[in-house]
Image (tube, rainbow, N blue to C red; front, side, top):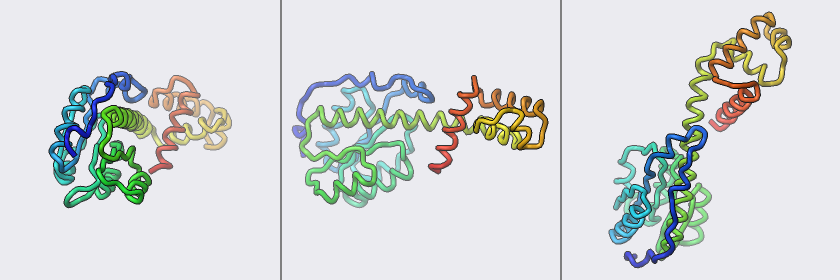
Length: 234
């Protein structure tokens, strides 16, 4: 494939995808990185120019080993990956990335894709699978949407890190009180369950609200739900 394979198409503004979100506002001001792994130098050069023109950071590699040797990027990012590579092929790289960099979506590109490979890649979580030659607007749309998914994933991870830290600051008794309170029990009922006075429950509940930085009981319930869901996925 040469540079002409990426045809000229309509340009799209990428900045609107990076608006602040809960737990991810810091991500709004960073420049996303688009990694490209392809052993065809003309493909790398073409994609590098295209990515740079969109205001993203292009990082190109001729082999999977070069890419995997890079430190993990803690900014919105995605990987444009050729299926057929010497050494580790694209599917092998996908297995590594899904474990080591789960927040990084993968856009596969190939000059000779087959149904079996496409299905295997998509089942393993590939974000998109494009066959060369592809139009410029098609690859740009795929990259833009992949970067948005990465931004949301990193934002969620940052939010959960904060929540886990707050929860870790609770004493064992405060965690018991929190669990019973968010389940809908009144202070008196919580005291009965734990064998402590209602006044003591109120004191622990106040500490829970303060340490978790919850503005209200519904706010605390939402936090508990997020923590439970994160634990169930672990």
